Each structure stands twice: as structure tokens, then as C-alpha cells.
Image (cartoon, rainbow, N blue to C red; front, top):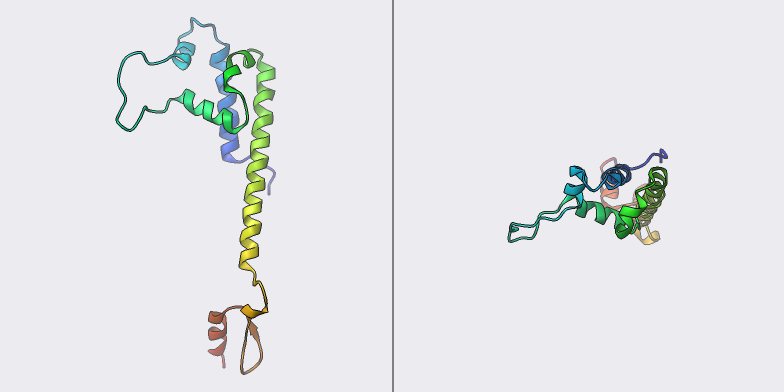
Length: 142
């Protein structure tokens, strides 16, 4: 309603923009090695491996309709990467808002009486109440 971005879209946009930073680093830099590296030794718990930041980024890119396999080549140009991150997140936010508006409209339609059968007239003064409990409360005034 205010025309501002939701928190989820804000976090997505910030996260995707930041991912371009280590991807633009040379391969010899430790942050890029940690971000792109794989764990060579060790075991995971019985409930599955712990999610890494890289896994969350890939999932968020998929939510926005971006291809995670081209992350290395797309992020090399900083200004192009910023616009590439901005457009899908805006589309994601627009879809999220449209879904919420649809849910609200469906909920509002269910809340309204569907026919005249759900109205309750008062026997004393012919006032129309929209619910049985409303009619009961209205009867207390007589």
C-alpha cells in the first residue's frame, strides 16, 4: 500500500548484490575460495547436511527466476549485475503482492454473506442482523 519493498524482497536484493562482490574477486582471494569451495573431509548429521550460505543464495536466485549456473560470468560487470539483481527482485515482489491481494479478496468474499438466507430478522422490531449471535445480542436490548 505504501509503495515500499517488502522485507523479503529487500533481503533478496541485498543478498544477491553482495554475492557479486566475492565472485568478482580473483581466485586467489580467501573469501572467494571459502564461498566457492567444497568441504573435502568430514561427515554430516543424520538429518542431512547443514545448509550453507551458497545454498541459500542459489535457492533465492531460483525464486527470482535467475540462473545460478551463470553467476560467475554475470557478476563480473558490477553495474550490469546490480540491474540484473534489481529487475527479478522487483518482479518477485510484484508477484508476492499480487498473491497477497488475491488471498485478501478471497477472504473478504467469504466473509460477506452469500445470500439473504444468512440474515436474521428480529421478531419485535424487524431489524435485520447479519448473524445469529448478533440477533441474540439485539434481543437483549428489548
